Amino acid sequence: MQRRAAPRHRRASGSRSSGRRTALVAAGVAGELLLTAGALVLLFVVYTFWGTGLQTAAAQDDLRDEFQQHLLSREEPTGAEADGGDDASAEPAPLELGDAYGILRIPRFGDGWERIVIEGTDPDDLRDGPGHYVDSVDPGQLGNFAVAAHRSGHGEPFARFAELREGDIVEIETIDGVFRYELDDAPDGDNDGNVIEATELWVVDPVPGEPAGTEPAEARLTLTTCWPRWGSEKRMYATGVLVDERPRDTATG
Image 1 (tube, rainbow, N blue to C red):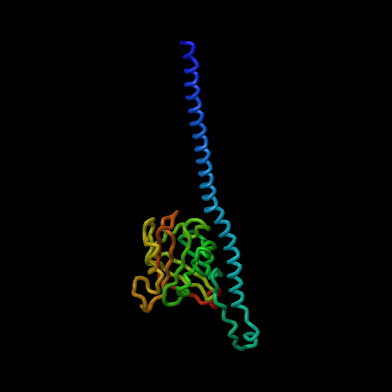
Image 2: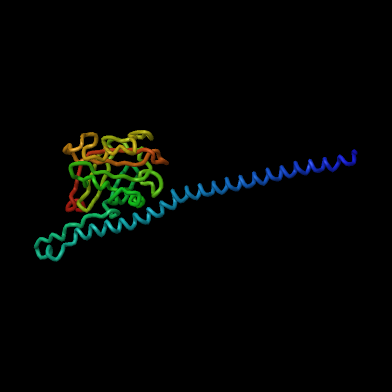
């Protein structure tokens, strides 16, 4: 009887070994899945902060060339103008979504910091750089000139947005001239400063915080971006008032 018991012992041992092998295989598969998921996340992060940055940099180069062409077209006299006459065709054509709008300069973001602003704030537009809210006025006009931009990805133009402080200068150059605004409301270094819900669009109204239809008495500026730094659940903003303007005929003189 004792000799017959040995095979039963060996079979039990074999069953336990098989269970261990199954557990090891399952652990190996789970590990591979985790590694694959980690690799995919890493690839996404690389694309978001490097791949999209390359795309935006290339788009900015093209937009800069486009803006320079706008300036040349405005400065070069047409045939009628050269003869001393008036020519209605000298007026620049209305901008379309995605067109180069102007050059935004914000010294707080670093020496020489500037980005080409495009017309429009749709996702496709903001992939190429800061965008002008199409329903807001042009720089220098009474009302609210408003610009939006990303804080992360796509060149992260507004990455340092929370560093903006009251008194900072924001400059925008268009084909009409150079306009300087002084911020009167900003995050002032607070990463959670000036945060509003994404649905609160009053900040880009003609007169922010006032009832619809209120006539603007100032030429104002509003900048908006996503909050938090690596998300887009809410919005962060800064506002300013026009303090200086140089029309194109003197801006380059």
